[in-house]
Image (cartoon, rainbow, N blue to C red; front, top):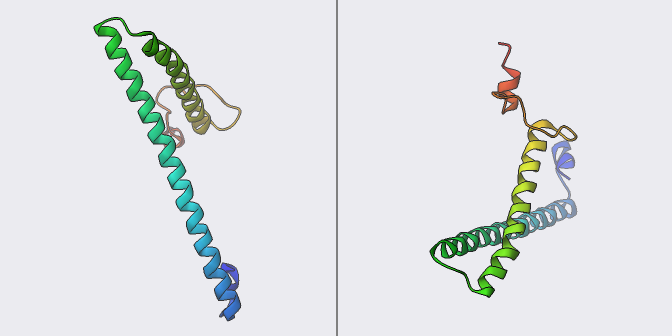
Length: 116
């Protein structure tokens, strides 16, 4: 529709369809933003709860429920951290090129300008 608009004036039907599509896209973006916020909020809450339980463990023995909760949350948090690290590595290197970059070449721009 955008391409048609650049070619010339749109008919009323095309203009209405374009407006409808824009509202749908805006709604989808808003829903995605809400899902992302909910996901990050849950991760922060998990991290806060782990920190709280670990602080309690330093002060004294935990109850069975607290120990079970900590045992359940820690592997999940570690797995998420590993996934995030792997994703960052893949993003920096490109798909199929896992592994750390050479020291000092942590960004593409630094790598590109290294010979200058």
